[in-house]
Image (cartoon, rainbow over all chains, first blue to last red; front, top):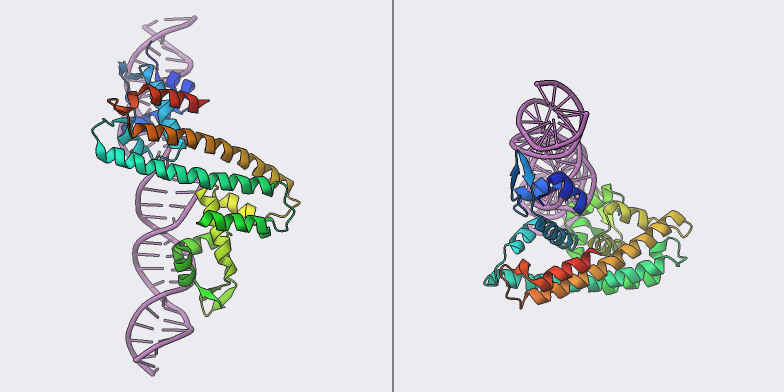
Length: 128
Length: 128
DNA sequence: CCTTGACTTGAAGCGCGGTTCAAGTAGGAG
DNA sequence: CTCCTACTTGAACCGCGCTTCAAGTCAAGG
């Protein structure tokens, strides 16, 4: 029922070194030791899924650590999350425009590609 | 008509040190010198807008450098851009889900917040 | 002409997110 | 009991994207 670090690494795709690093940063902890070896509760897998997800989404590990310990009364954190939500929202729009530009680049014949007027206009739109 | 590095920095919001750094990396170049000082053609502003846009979108500077010199015949690059497009597309979906989760976090009362089942389900969806 | 202040360079330093290394320890198979 | 292997630690190192620093140059304004 307890997982050692190799098992957690295998199941999450994270390197053991990364798991120890996350521990130092306060993102996860082992439930105990088997001799010297860390013994993890399976729940750590969900936690790591969340961490990976948030990290991929552009949260720093420090932000994630804060978020993981959040209690409903933490209004400062709630405000932070609301700000993050707006940030993510802007990013979604920006990336959507970028994707459209990339889609165009796949069929565009301008030489060099960056000189394409359609591209330039997309960049101008993105700047706003 | 020629801009010095301070002017370019002011107009783009990038630090002069960043502009020199980009030059070393082959992303931009000055059109000449006024004494020792770099003299930039105004077109560099558009180029920098594109660089900033791409960088914000998760391209590395090395990728951007490659992209900036792209000619229509570069099929390897075209393939790379197509892959990047798929990547960006996935990212948009992931971020959209994340934004929805953040929106929920703003009104959720679970203690700690990460224990919220709605949240956990969102993470599971994101993992696929 | 002299001063000022923005520019020049190369090298070093930084924050992030880890990885790698050296040296040591111990669970479990044979 | 011995051996193998996966684990343990702290410290050093890495790539990225810059910034900072020290030392020096020079264009423009008074």
